[in-house]
Length: 113
Length: 112
Image (tube, rainbow over all chains, first blue to last red; front, top):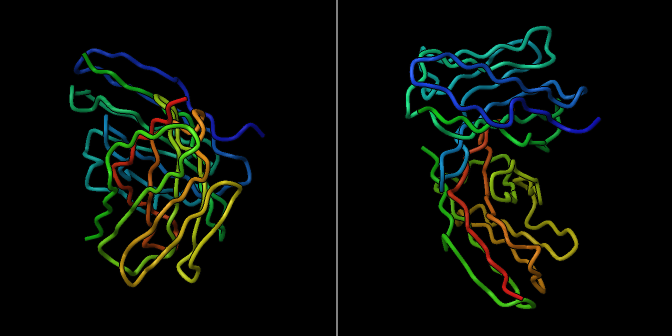
């Protein structure tokens, strides 16, 4: 297992377009998290999955954002009608049930032009 | 609402000096506190995790302390090296399922 994998690493899109990011967590981790990080700030929580169930969503996750984790394996984060304010690094992390350690992926950097 | 603050925002030291990074949080009802390292344009690497019942954790040249009552944690890095140059982030978890609240980080530069 090579850790948490995120694709693509970079995405440049025009304002108004839809984008989708993928996260493949560590296989035995049933908890999965999405965070967003802007320049000079710490990551901000977006949403949390336990297996396939989305149990928590931040107010930051507007109606244009949707996340899924079918079958409790990989997860996707989709942003519809992108805006320049969506430009950020989107980070995925996973952890095992009952344990405390996080493993983060390398992130997907989104630039909206 | 939990707020996490890291001071200083940036720090530059010559190689060999010890580093002291500070983190404060406003709500002492936490499950754990973690320290992460982030290299430019990269994801986060977990360094140390301190559970709420613990006072400190050590790993190699790194030592982190936790004082829940005063809402503070300190990360010590002994005998700094240029490879320690990075941004260091602290994060607290106030939930059993692990939602993290991050500080803005301290950017560290270690000069040869």
